[in-house]
Amino acid sequence: MDWRQVVAVNLRRIRRERGFSQETLAYEADVNRTYISKLEKGSTWVGLEVLVKISKVLQAEPADFLERPTRRSAKKL
Image 1 (cartoon, helix red, strand yellow):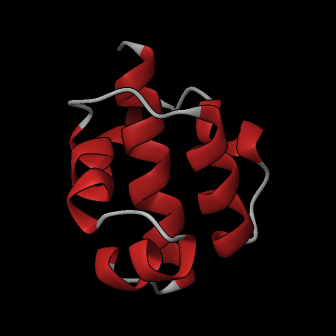
Image 2 (spheres, one colour; image 1 turned 180 degrees about the vertical axis):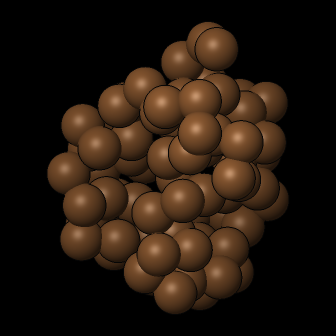
């Protein structure tokens, strides 16, 4: 699993746990919704500034998005 996929899995998981839609997260973080979608698909790299914006909205640490998921949690998503 490359780092884009690691961020994708964690972003999707954390966003869902916090009860945010992609649209609401994008609005609150001042990021384009299609960019959030691309991040969750793992099709683009996330910039540090955007990662910090997203983490603030989701009340998570930026490092939380870089934790390698266990196989079990990755399969659930």
